[in-house]
Image 1 (cartoon, chains in turn purple, orange):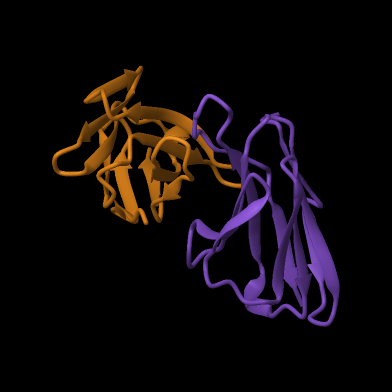
Image 2: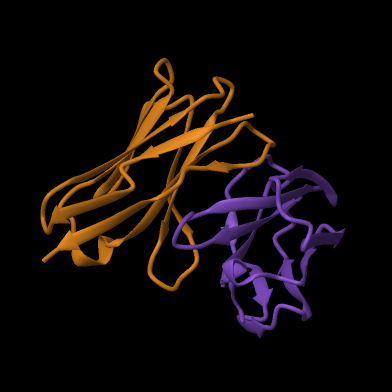
Length: 114
Length: 111
């Protein structure tokens, strides 16, 4: 176990549903990330939070809404998704207080939009 | 910001041969260069990393080289085995800043 936990592991949702992905880390890291992984783009950065502040938003559609209530938790709220949003969503954390930037990934949430 | 390019996107190697994956980066201030391996159905995991004060680092069959002047770094896997089949990602960052990943290389080891 790497210390980064994602729930749920699998999610099937309709295009009109609203759901949330959760990520939790107990590594004392200051930065957390959401990545989308699909056949077309192996590792696509979506959002970066540093010290609970969003520092990067890579032109992600507004149907994806991140939330970082504290340095240990990160959410990705989903609404009115499209079938092309089906992918593996990976959460990662990095940057401990020593400055180490090794990223630890969660197991991912396999999302299927029907 | 940092931009990392990775080549090739796919690589097939006969078992026992060597594999080399190359990455270039744009930010001359980047000083940390990790490599991640993602096996099928699993999360990416760190396999080796190098910092800018070192030119080469080895760990058994895996080695990474760094050329700061040219701003490129490479992953070398010798005596490849079937379990080396995976997607490999390079990344770069400055100290205290986020990692920027390359686009990945799917390595297939042919028995």
